[in-house]
Amino acid sequence: MFIHIGDDHVIQSKDVVTIIDHHLISSSTIVEEMIKNQRKAKRVIETEEHQAKAIVITNDVIYFSPLSVFTLKKRANMMTTLNKLEDFSEESDF
Image (cartoon, rainbow, N blue to C red; front, side, top):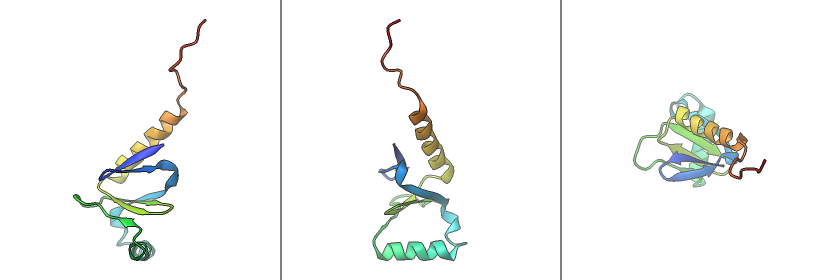
């Protein structure tokens, strides 16, 4: 399934490694260094119009999202729930 993470970016949910709050960057030197290295490798996509609220780390790219961690989590959970639903599109004859 896919998750819309803001700024017209849609990613596959299976590629998401983690979603973290943007404010945690300054509290973790490891995260700061990782983002710095990924920026050098041009593997960071920053939010264009809004201030970033969350960071979505995928297997290949780091996205800065204008959506909150809570909103992204709800979207990811909604996709998981939809995947578990049975397909009732075809009605059976009884």
